[in-house]
Structures are given as C-alpha cells and as structure tokens.
Length: 219
Length: 286
Image 1: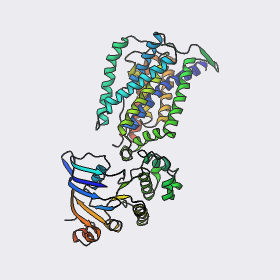
Image 2: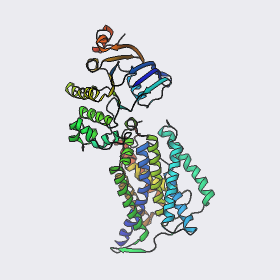
Image 3: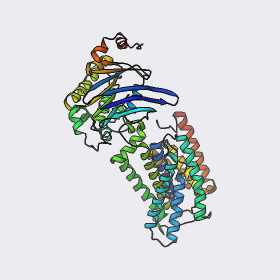
Image 4: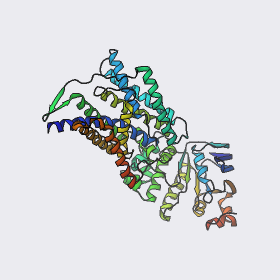
C-alpha cells in the first residue's frame, strides 16, 4: 500500500531523507519512530505529494490522507467548513459519516476551529482526513501536546478503523509506547536514515530503542 | 448644508470606486500574499475598453460587461506572470506586478493612445434632501453595495469561496487537503481583475481615463487596503469611503489640487499607527 524505495529528499544542500526504504502492507498499521529532526515529517509530506523526491520512488496504492503535525486546521473557518474542505479530493461534502464516528464534532460544528482546545483540534484534523475517504492514512504525531486520555480516545478510533475497515495506517510518533501498543511493526528513523526496523515486540526489547522511551537519542 | 450633502454623496461614490479596486487588492493579498501593484491597471483597461466598445456602436450593458471580462482576463494574465511559477516569493511577485503595470502602459498607448478617454454613463441627476447628485454616482454606490454583498456571499457561503479562504488561512493545510493553491491564487487574480474592471467602467463616465490614471487609482486603493491591513474587506470598504469623502470635501472646499496628497497623507498616518500596534502588512505563511 505504501512502498518507498531508496527515497532521497533534500532542502537545498541539506539532505532530510537519505535512501529511506519502507513498506506498509494493505490493512497494516506500522509505526515510524524517531527524534525531532529525524525526517519523519519530511517523509509524511513526501508521501502526501507535497515534497518532490530528489531520488528514489514512492508508491501509494490508494487514496492517501495526511493528518499533519500540529493539526494545521483552517483557524478562521468553522469545524463544519474544515471538515467539508477535507472532502475536496473525494467530493464528499456532508460530514455526517464523520459525525457518526466522532459525535463530539457534531456538537462543535459551528465553532471556529482556531478557538478549540488542542484535543478538539486534533479530532477535527482526524475527521478532516477521514472526509477524503482515505485508504491509507498517515498520522504525523497523533499524541503531540495532548492529554493522555485524549490521545487514548483518538488512538482507539484509529485502531477501530484499521481493524474494522481495513484502513492502512502509518503512525509517525515520538511516543514509542503508544506506537508499540497500536502497531505490529515499526521503523526507527534518525538523521534521515532508517536505523532499525522490525516487529514492535522485538524492537521494544532492543536497548537502543528502549532508550528512546526515555527521550534519549538512539545511538 | 446642501453643498455638504452633495460633497458627501459624491465622496461616497468616489470611495465606492476606490473600495472596489482596494477589495481586489485584498482578495489577491489574502489568497496569495502578493501586493498587486497592477490593480489600478485593470480599472484603466476596463475603462478604455468601454470607451472603445461604445464608440464602435456596441450597446450599454454589453460594452461594460465585455470590458469587465477583459479586465478579469488581464487579472488572470497578471496572476500567471506573478505566481505562475511555483516557488516565487510574494516579494518577487510584487516586483513582477510592478513590471506588468509598466508593460500595460506600453500596450495601452499602442491601442488607445496617450490622450484621456471618457464614456457616457447614466445621464441626469436627482435631488436628495436638497442636494443634487449625479445619477451615475448613485449607480456607483448601488453597484458597489451589490458587489460587496455578492463577495460576502461568495466567500461565506460557497465551497469555492471557502477554499479560497482556506488558502488565505493556512496555505500548507490547503495543500494537505488537496487544494491547488496556485490555481486558487490565479482565481484570486482574476477576481481582482473583475473588481478592478467594475470600478473602471463605473468611473470612466465620471472622470476621463488615460493609461497613467492607474497611479491615482492604486494610491487611493492601497491607502484603503492598508486601512484594512490588506486582509479585511469590510474595514477596507470603510477606509475607502472615508478617503473618498475626505478627498471630495478637500476638493469641494477649495483644495482640489491636493486630492492625492490627502490620500497619501492618510495612508502614511494609518501605516504609522498600524505599525505601532502590529505589522500592517503581514506576509501570509507559506
């Protein structure tokens, strides 16, 4: 579903992704871990077609939606308008299916997105991505800046969509514990390179990866 | 008192024309982050086109409509030059719009010569509370009110209008959901051309238009747009009306040769006040 081979992405002379190879199978939920500046968001933006690779290939086997880091809503527009614009590609304008999954959004529909709490904004970003009827969802930092109960709620919805609708998910996270709870496999990215990959259970036992739980760099 | 009322209504009409051009500046700046210094050119092109088409015997209505569409096309072409190439910074695009304005001088002189041209508008005048007002002035006020109402409906109620607002609100997020921000920018330029064109066809019967009239128009419109921090259409409208009334009062009470200075003075005062509060011209995030 996602097939990245030898991907190189540069900003001018700085190389952000250096020959990254990564695959996510249909219906799979895979984590991508790494510290700040590792190139995780660069990969997310490249998968979404917002950045052009300098070399390598990116294959996406279905409609992809991105929940970007920092929510990135349209703060001047209402929640309902944010959701409707999420359907720009799919042609879906009516957010009732999203309201069915996330009833809180129906209550917030008329509110301006910019004044909502971080958790509510993340929920809007989540709903907006679903409006494009994605087959592949790339989630960039689901838990960033959110209270644990809000993160758990959203993670539950994500797992449900993956389990019941076969949604393919690439979960980009710094919170390795959350990522390992949700995903079967994971990649670890550092300084633009994949430095570890495998089953989450195995990676959790790797002392280098374990140090990342504590926020230390993987060496 | 009747003289004051006459100046007030005439000033509102002048302000309305300025508001239409300024709203074009605001629409383009909101969506693209570019200050379009060719905005006055759209009004000039529309005014000169109207003059030619009426001179060729085309009827009223059709001539003005065609002229406004030509101005919208000019807006689109200006947009292609300014933002057509991906990655062009707003500052580079601004310089391109200045260049387009200069190029337009040459084209206009070749097509229409360098002498001012006029066009007949609505004839006659009406008396309101003892003040005589040209019917054309009332037409300008009415059309401007309708144009602003339609703009509010377009941006507030339509999906396309909201997509344009989304580009202004968060260009990165707009790209994330799949909106082509460059295409939306071109649409904003065409809309800016349309608004400038409406101003041009309305103003030409009131004051002759020549290739270099755009300078006066853009200075006034820019002053009004700065009043609205280049982002807020309603405050821009208020600024334009204030400017129009101030200029007409200055002219009416014997300072007619200093109209432009009134606009420039007002613009400088507003910019100084705004700059002391926050950045008057804030670039959109890219």
